Every structure is written in structure tokens, then in C-alpha cells.
Length: 50
Image (cartoon, rainbow, N blue to C red; front, side, top):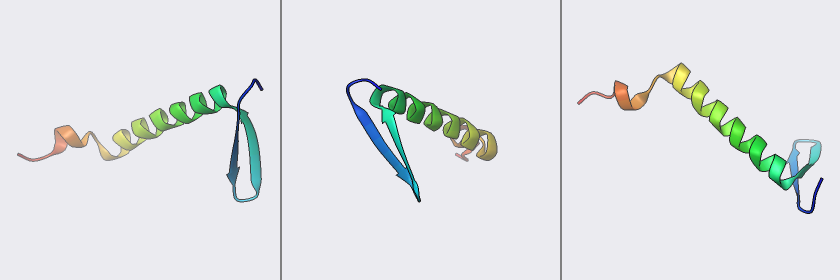
């Protein structure tokens, strides 16, 4: 852990992260979720009717 930290909590768990590593983990998770949503739901931009 460097200079800045992030405290994250969920139900009864508290995590202390290095700020840079936390932001990277969150960004990666958002990308993974977007890919999963597109895979499950399809690409809505291409699927829309005109």
C-alpha cells in the first residue's frame, strides 16, 4: 500500500486497498461486466429495428 488508500465494504467485510490498484480492479470489473452483458443480451445498437 502506497500513499493513498481506499476502504471498501460489503455486508460484513471491510477491505483496504492501494488507491491505484483498487481503481484498476474496478475498471477491469466494469469491462468484464460490459462484455458479459453484451454476450448475454447481444449488441443492442446492431439489434435495434429501424
